Amino acid sequence: MHDTYILHIASWYPHDESPYEGDFVDRHIRCISTQVCGIVYFGKAVNKPLVKMQISNYENCKVYKRLFQRAGSLSNYSKYHALANHDINTIIKDHGVPLAIHCHAGFPGLSLSSALAKNYRIPLIFTEHSTIYQQEKLSIKEKLIFWHLNKYISKADVVCPVSLAHSESISAKCSVKKIDVIPNVVTNPFFETLLKKSPSPSKLLHISSLDNDQKNITDLLKGFNILKNKRPDVSLTLVGNSNITLVKRLIKRHKIDLLDIKIIGPLEHTAIPKLMTEHDLFVLWSRYESFSLVIAESWASGLPVLCNESGGITAENNEALGHLSKNYTPEGLADDIDRTLNRYDEFDITEIRAYAQKRYSEVSIAQKFGDLYNSLSIL
Picture 1: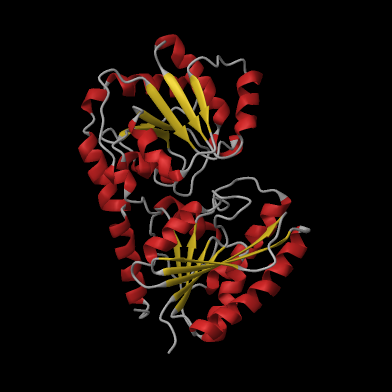
Picture 2: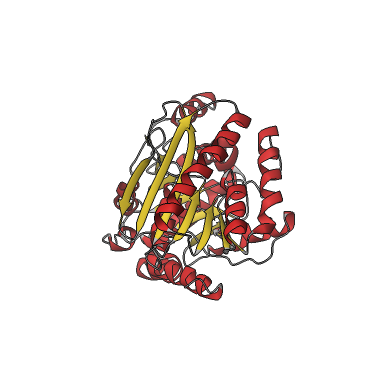
């Protein structure tokens, strides 16, 4: 007797050489798998490949990872498809034809996913996370990736952007059959930490890839430097699993005082809930976002958020949840942080958590995908 399952094709997923890559995709799939069992396939070109495919078992979910030898970009793409076709044929031989294909992040897995869905005449769901639809300037490689995405996205029965802003960006540039916005998931530990409110707020937190092109770390640091003149007690914690060296160079280049700036990384995702409760305000100053999971995680931790409107869920921010800045300059950032800390007593951290619970909790997101699968007659 064959299994009843959804086959998830993950273009991003944690692996030995990059244990934090696509960890949010992993959490997304595990959440969905509470509705119907999932099998995950992930292929990646790496520097130190493994001879055999890795197979892991989780509750309601089985993961197959194929790590192969890195080569040139086109060679990587061709080898991915050659190996993936063989691997997935083996998976289907062992487990039967899946109820549907669910692709997470479009490159390189969307072309493979669309071919499988067509071959087995089953629905194709595509959850997209990439910010490539929002970027104004693309490198040659990014242009090739976008060409790939634009070619295959119309073949999906449903495209699931992770935010309304993300949906609008995709719809503006691509032809799609149907769109159903389903956010990223905030896992239970963020809702289980003890809520804390400081009597003298001064601790700022920023967590991201620390990629300056997207996250605008330069202006974040400049704004903090200006803020120090108004509030000498303020401190900033920067957390990232990459680009730490780049941030240190930016601090040195712009002659920013290192006093009261703490840089942490790499950091396990499980350590973030406690870290958030030890701070007073989360700050995001990006140029573009598809979702910005750390904002939702901050709200789940009862932490107010200050951000500019850069896509994703930033537009949801309001005076009850933090502050949505309209002045996208270092001076504007400093002024807005100062004003937000001055009215810190107004924030109801219990209500902030309740807002996130309703929209981004595991129960909420699992139900949304359950409803989507039902609408496609999968369940």
